Length: 298
Ligand SMILES: Cc1cc2nc3c(=O)[nH]c(=O)nc-3n(C[C@H](O)[C@H](O)[C@H](O)COP(=O)(O)OP(=O)(O)OC[C@H]3O[C@@H](n4cnc5c(N)ncnc54)[C@H](O)[C@@H]3O)c2cc1C
Image (cartoon, rainbow, N blue to C red):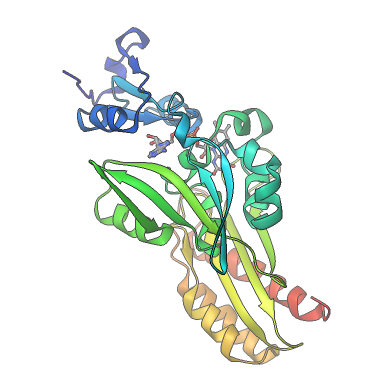
């Protein structure tokens, strides 16, 4: 019988049992019994060091080989990149298919931790953390996830899973696959992560966008997302709509600034207030919008 201890102080390393299932259904069965999935273990280790309670049973996902690999898929007029949840952040940076068709994800992965961590950390673990830096990029890329809940396999949009987890944070699910529609011709993107200082600290805010321009003053399409630190990653739907339906000028920029501040859902911690975080994000985004519209060839 698996027991979950609440006091971290109670747990010795020798109390921890690591299971190595090879099949998804075995991993799910162990999860139902109270075990915790571990992929790269980089976040779990960090949280444990900060005193977060740990299950006495860890379910090592590594042996489930079907959760690894990257594929290019064509279906009718659409094409996708499919990434197994156990693909490491380093592999995402190096993989030629991801580089060709989902460059924004590559940019996001380059900003996650340091190489040693990226070699172990997985994309699935980054998403399942709920706050990973890949999430804003994947929201903009309209990523779809294949997940296992009990004995059912479901396909759900990333934003759908994030809102489901808000209502049911203890949901027992296994992330299997991330599917990203391939970047279309003419689409451009940026990814910016801001910290409190150069040395390693969690992001103050992460902001990214992907867009297509139809004229010097008008975008045909833009997706914008904000996340980083403990911010709830989200798309700025209202700001996107304003940009798609109005010609760009200085007045629009001014009203956009206020709209951005309004739409972001942030938080305060002992170092930085919610208001400051929102204004950092708005300043960053406005500066990037200026770049987009001043680069007439873009
Ligand atoms: C020094 C350091 C710096 C870091 N810097 C960054 C950073 O800059 N940006 C950033 O985003 N993160 C950062 N992290 C956090 C972490 O490394 C990443 O989020 C990483 O991608 C997590 O992946 P993992 O495979 O190690 O997850 P794990 O630690 O194995 O798991 C993380 C969580 O996801 C769950 N999980 C894992 N895989 C699955 C799955 N397939 N299905 C369902 N649940 C799953 C686990 O149960 C756990 O709750 C840092 C960590 C360290 C130690």
